Figure 1 (tube, rainbow, N blue to C red):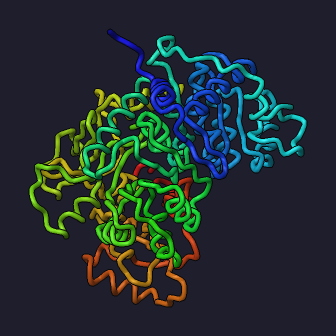
Figure 2: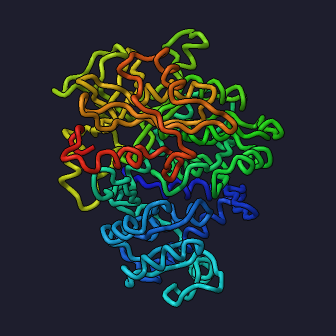
Length: 539
């Protein structure tokens, strides 16, 4: 028997097997899985009543909320394509994405009405639906808000056999650091298999908790890279979604204590913020079983500090929008024997090994796998059913990225005999100084170990003699005072001389994207603006 593979089956299972269970908590709003299913079906009917046709995009512009979670299912139920917009993009970028995707409807939080006003001027043809009724919206907004449209719609039941598993279900646009943003297409089949594979990856660890007992807090924005897969895996497990609108330490701790949260994910900047939250010890965080750190390189020190503070398993994970996104997890394998505490932490801070269903390679410029010695650097490649179905309307860009069924990630790394990967840098972030390759991540890990430094970033800047040299941007902890020379002296004690940044710039804060990931291109680009060519060939 061959049935369509679609994440809609995840919601159907949750409604059938866990219908009366509270599946979603969003502030004071609590929804059972039957209610989530009913609302998703009503949303699908409402979108069709608005004129949505098969294969057309529905964009969302909102922070995390239960309505956005509902859209993960309601839009594809209507045979549409969900396009969560990153709220932190510029008006110009948002306008480009709406044009390029051919979006028909935008579901938006009224707090973004000023941004939507600017976008409406360029896209008067779009249907703009507010997620709530504030009573003060412009005339170009649809007269009925999201809640009113759902109330008037019919909850049509889902027949998942009616869906083409190869059709696009979700569309996410990349940052566009090397040109206009590119839309990553994820089909029903791709998303279904990513949900299965990542669940198998999570279950590979012994956390003494059943899948349906998980209480997952959505700390990662749902508009970012498929919400790291949690809208699907949590639903399929019959587990509980805890919606977090903004990442604020006090609210995070309150929710962990109140809802008995068992798991959530962070990027390193979020983790650092939590570690420095003064009232952390005042909350009961004993329900936590695991934390996953992704989005940027981690360190043994960070993993160790988090495990001590939260008394739970902490490990790194890795992926790209193009891999749906989870591709690797740094949990230990039973083939690795007894490890020392130092080695365990080192492993859990690595990029990790592939989740089930994903194959990895690390190749040199000639396409040959590099030795598994944790020293030989190459580009990381992936092959899997979870790799994107292509870039929206950009076949040439797709063919440059996916070659012979292998996705070229642009991440440079090393690996070992256990197939554990360790990213040393992005291709565009590798600093080539006087012919030597310098990893910005290596320097940042040393900087972040300094007791006075809160966070840091290192980029390559032009240099007349060496071509380019490392430059460090540093944010100090509150009350700390330290000189540039002190930092450079500290680095010289831990790094080869040519890796030590030639300058250190102190900042009150570093530019960050939607998940809190530091945007190195924002730091780097001004220094290369007037260059005739970029040493990295456009990166």
